[in-house]
Image 1 (cartoon, rainbow, N blue to C red):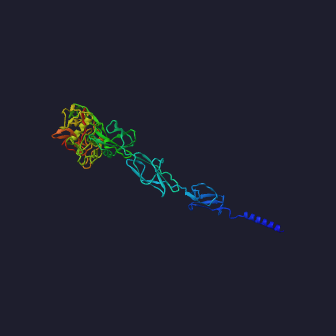
Image 2: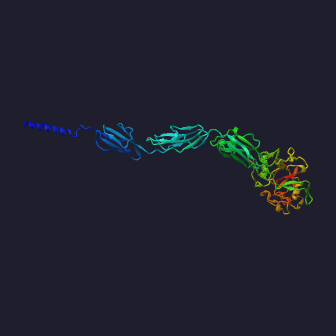
Image 3: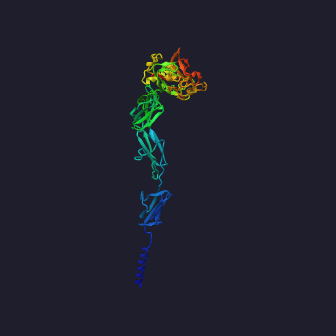
Length: 538
């Protein structure tokens, strides 16, 4: 019986030990897991399974999820620095503390480039760049191929073309898009002439064609000066205000117009590139130009005796169809070297100081108009006898004719009018013969009619009247206009120390406009009712 109790006791002890070995006791290793976002509000981490402690070897899945504009970037802590697994599967072998790093995923706006604009420049250009706080700013001068970190104001000084862009990267590593490209060219070298300037279209009465070519695009400036100027500076040429754009290495035809007929000019040229580099004074080019001239219309007057037998000529002449106008006389003033006060070869050509003088001067003579001459095709007034003579010699020279006058003494070179080649004043006899219509004239009271209103401007109030454009009324039998009225006309015939004037004017009475009438005036005296017309031996 005693032996049986011992056996039961042993079995009970064994059972007790077995039960103790199968219980969940503290001998099993467990570990802590701590997971949180690095910055509150940027994201959260889901833990599966979620426990207070994890047995050794237990797998745990961590799934990070960003909030708002933030995305998961990487893990930090417990040997997982830089790990980017999402989800991250852990095997618990120790206590683990992790933080999930979430970063802003929105790129910043592009930075701002300030202080510079696209274009060509002939000097150094500087710029600055502004962006978001703490951002890394970079710029590129080759359109984004290579980048330089920006720190302070940048100066572009090398002569070349820059394609300037900028970008910025925020603390989260987000990089902005590039700024719009600003193309800047630094060019400090003036252009050079490739060809020309050369005359390509021969000058006519008022214009000339000139071609030029430069090695880079820009502007060609030119200034037109009357012949005799030795040299102009580059700035003087530019300041004239005449210009035309030009492309690199492409020949440009430049038409220069509004020139005076029968005039010699010096035309100066200078080029400036698009960067503003103006050629130096030594590179200014000069082109010599001479315009041609077309003589006023002439009417042939054949020799013979007037119908009333009062006058005759034994040689043919040509007489101006119209009285010489302001437009025609101004061409002479600008071409012949007349001074600004109206003087030429020691004589007053036109009375520039007269209140009714219609010619002005501002670097060159021009039609200014006056109360007695309102438009340019009116007969020139305030012109002296010497002015008419000077005009004739100038016109003769431009037509290749031997001038009729010797300006040393202001006399005809010969008294034999039949052999004179150049233009001249008519004698009183020649004027009367032509005014009467020549040999086949009708012997009328006025040139071309017995009715003065048909052929003459006359009888106007001296205070408010004025000259009229030439050729508006009826011509005489030969086709010559305004012989009676409009303006008195100078002749070559002396009357003592004066010269005979004929025909009457816009302010004359009817009697003064009769063909036979005349008076004499000092040859140095101009007035608002006196002009002249051409004559030459045919």
